[in-house]
Length: 439
Image (tube, rainbow, N blue to C red; front, side, top):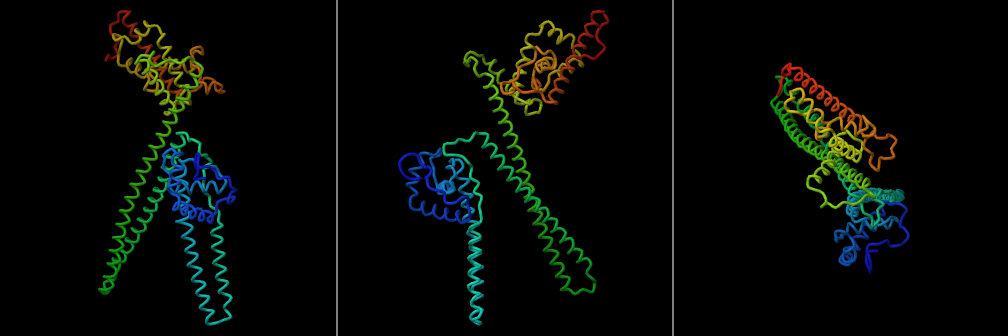
């Protein structure tokens, strides 16, 4: 399994040692691994090292491989052996063996007590055997207790996706945060108890009768001062625990945000790959720097729209944004000039013009995004991405918040057009400047 020619490690092919892991099996595997590593460490490193990604193998890896093989499970991927091996070693060395030592000490005391009683009264001699039998039974129950090894069903050749490691990192961070929050909560309770005790002892000192002797007063004062010092220590511990919990919560939140952004970016990239599947492959040198920048910006905006809750799919958002950009490029240029003429500008127009851009980060007008989103003319609507093309909701890829944002920008743009039209009428009929203040 670990030594010999060819790729190592590999399954031994032997019958499983047990149907499920128990404390006794964990102890046996731990001792067998220790003996094997003590006698053949260099040979195992030479045989297995070249076939693992890091090139490094230690006793913990061997323990994980032997455990999986003994339970007739697939060999673990090298990325999992360290975590699984440490968990099994901790179960064997830190938990089970300590419990066995406690049981042995308890049995020794019971047997010694029974023998002492039998030495005085021979008729109590059967109790010695009973005490020994009780100890053996308790040991057997502990060793036969099932243990969940939590072995992942991943073979040696399997490769975990990046999303798995991001999710595991987030899970570990959240678990650490939960422990620190529990510790902070416990510290707050202990501080409250210490404060109550100090307050109570202080009250007793104040209520001492004037006739109390010096020794009584001195004892009461000493108890109060000790309680006050204990309360201060508990208060300091609480501050440290709360600060650690707060930092962990911030780190957990940042990890979840980073994981979500990475997942959305990966989904957008997959949507792009699916959309371009079967199409002609373009070389990067056929695009200008500006065109490449526009392509990248459209991807970033699409992912941002999904992260902000405006879109259900980043791929569909990217296609809609490109369609809106296409519609804006083919609009009548004279109408654009009329719409944004400097001599027709006023404070109200410029404010509406600024608000006619949805999602803040885009330069596309709300009317074009509404058309590309299927809220106006069906012929202008963008297509769905390859993954969502067969969905039952048609072209409605926007969320409710996204639809509201597009409609708001569309209404602001239409109002800006009305302001321009009114200003032109003022100038056309010779009424002078628009009474609305200009910027």
